Length: 283
Image (tube, rainbow, N blue to C red; front, side, top):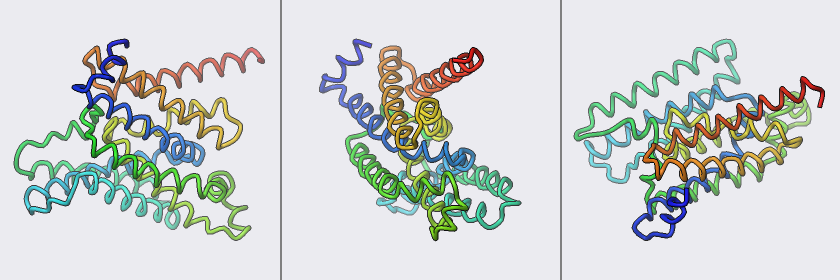
């Protein structure tokens, strides 16, 4: 771990500092939106959105390579696909609940399939594994600014509309009776989740994204009594998991994403076990 902190000050290891900064920035969105996701119990929807991102990335790479659309960045495609799938799933869940599970599963599978087909038809070598499992060490200086901008947007909306989103998460019927546009706020929450998923794709990849979106918030939920407290604790947990994951994976030459997830998963299991032990013994 000492080698990691020494490397942070080394100009030749600027990529490591970029990785840590992006991880810490992403933690803020994860803490805020992850708390909404866990509280509203839309983890399955968030997982479907994350897997649809691959289709957008594949399409963007194909357009950039084959059609000469140099402005078409993979993260732009990921954002478009995430928002489109969020709105589609959200509308289905609002107006056709009896088919919600089927549609979510279909969107999940189609998004992955479309992405892999675009990868196959893109000239040159395209490694889908870097998007499926991520590599935070490949974050560039430009990526830091992109993530910071999107992070600012997600947090500003998530915190700025806190009372409305809080009502949607805990008591939709009461909020609707008070005149709140519950359906619109629910769709907004799904769009914020989609943007947060895009933030995480470069950090831990598509496959592991749902773990970082839910595990820190789930850990925080055992200690917080208010949603804003849960957000704050979840953010701190994310920052700790990212820092520890990078600090241990870098000197050991291990992929950072899975190590970060192992810390998050291990912390969650320990908290759950301790919580159950204390409840069983009446403390």
